[in-house]
Length: 184
Picture: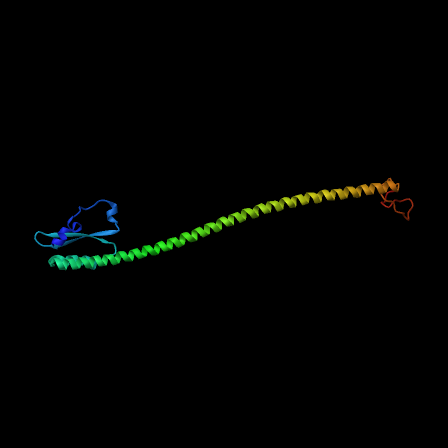
């Protein structure tokens, strides 16, 4: 009992709390009655997931000598160390996974940025091509108009040269009084 009394975590009893964080802690408080006259109570704080067998071992400390108590406490400490080590290895695994995910995220962000640049470049090239197409279309219309104008000019020149005053051709007809269009 002397060893337990020297340890503040076993002797300082705390009043019940009304804080919500104490109802859902990462550790749990266990209060154990050791009996005796006057009654002795022990309050211990264990990590969540600690087996109930560790809590039941505290009750067995009631009639133990200092050496036996120390051995039990050493066993408790070793169990807690194993539990904490297991938690730490889980944390290391999470850190490794986090680094991997961050690396993948950076790669994905770079690929997205490169894709956005490529898309912008293609859009600019598309606008340039459409501008060229519109320019060629205008050139084609101008060339077509020029060809039409030249054809009309040649037609008019040919008519003047051959002294043709009417645009309507006259075809010989078997009927002398009738024109080919049916008028008389």
